[in-house]
Amino acid sequence: MLYQKHCSGCHGINFQGGNAQSLVDGVWQFGDSTGHISRNIKHGITHLGMPGYEKVLTDAQIRSLVDYLKAAEKNAAPPEHPLPVYLQTLDYEIDVSVFAEGLDTPWDIAFLNKDTALITERSGTLRVYADGHLFSKPVEGTPEVLAEGQGGLLAVAFDPDYLEEGNQWVYLAYSHGLEQQPNGKRSPAMTRIVRGRIDGNLWKDEEVIFEAEREHYLTTRHHYGTRIVFDAEKNLYFSIGDRGTGAHAQDPSKPNGKIHRIQRDGKIPNDNPYRRTKNTVKSIYALGNRNPQGLAFHPETCELWESEHGPLGGDEINLISKGRNYGWPIISYGKNYNGSIITELTHKEGMEQPIWYWNPSTAVCAIDFYSGDLFPKWNNKLLVGSLKYEDVRILSLEGNRVMHEEIILKNAGRVRDVCTGPDGAIYVVLNDPGTILRLTPKKQ
Ligand code: HEC
Image 1 (spheres, rainbow, N blue to C red):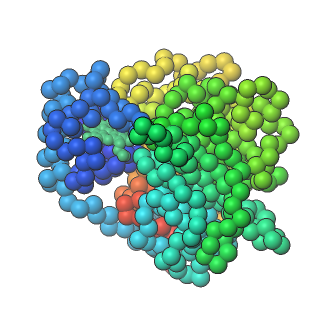
Image 2 (image 1 turned 180 degrees about the vertical axis):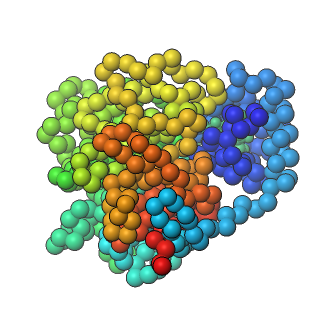
């Protein structure tokens, strides 16, 4: 089936969307005529991450795909996700409840304590959850984001010393667009990190703590990364995707396709690997990453683990070490989405192997280690969310090896984030519908 083979990775197995939008929602942003749709498939919409299929599919095949999509659109029922209320896993019977709903493409959730959380919506709003409910009004005055393609308001994190006197810093990662260009050109954009404080319902004291040089901003609208995590020394780590240009991931003079490390005020830690190298981005901690959207520290070893969207068949889990090169796009287990070869190499000296990879790709998004009291058998196992298969998996590890993978939640919606809450429950952030689920062991 042409669709399943070439398109489902991004547009979803049931056309519902995944990495990219739904193709059966009746919305054709780029033209709804057969001619427009055919041209979009043939030449792609490359600045948004839609590959061109000119070299892979014949005109007749493209035409048959268009007919197929049109028929599917006609038959499509409104998306419906009966939320599961109960799950059976190898170790636990689980109750599923709705923690928050009615969100607009929620992307990340950060907990301050078991009663308070912040949630980002990709369209650019920051929502507060406190004392048992989601506040209807978003925080006012948060930075303007460029919410196009995969971009928008992405990661959120509380300062490790938030509760210390006067600290109260909250960190945000988002797609930042430069001002409108003359001659109607698309404005270049890049991932940016700020911190600020929330006072009442107002965002204030904003400081930019990471910003790329303007020359590194790109007009593409995909592969921004990102997550924000802190190590034991309270350094801040974040990721930026390759922004659609794989070769940049190998170039230390560019910020994209990298894992970065900075201090909380934006200063560069003394032992950053490129700190003393000319013409490099000093915040780089590791390089050669395609589109990392999951970062988590192992609760015991304190090692940094990462998940990254690969190309077709190359989604990865990596163990990130300082200064190492994770190989994209020189080595990869995947192919381009349009079937063309990226590289014949899966190994190369000086480049790290993933701990785990998926073929076919799952559109891996967030990761977190379970650590809590509610599911003691899952402590130190890795929770992984998938956008494409709409599931949450749990990986059992022995040292750095994945010994077993189990799907614990299925068919609920596209999973953007998964994390352990301070109460030991597992929280799952879903898109379509914009809902956050809470998983707890079934009460006997
Ligand atoms: C690598 C991911 C990816 C793959 C694979 C992919 N697409 Fe897309 N596609 C996108 C993105 C991203 C967009 C831009 C839409 C958006 O704004 O999210 C898009 C847009 C489109 C559009 C325009 C939709 C509109 O609203 O006008 C069509 C049609 C389309 N894709 C068809 C296909 C078909 C058919 C295939 C398989 C041959 C395919 N795509 C494979 C990512 C992908």
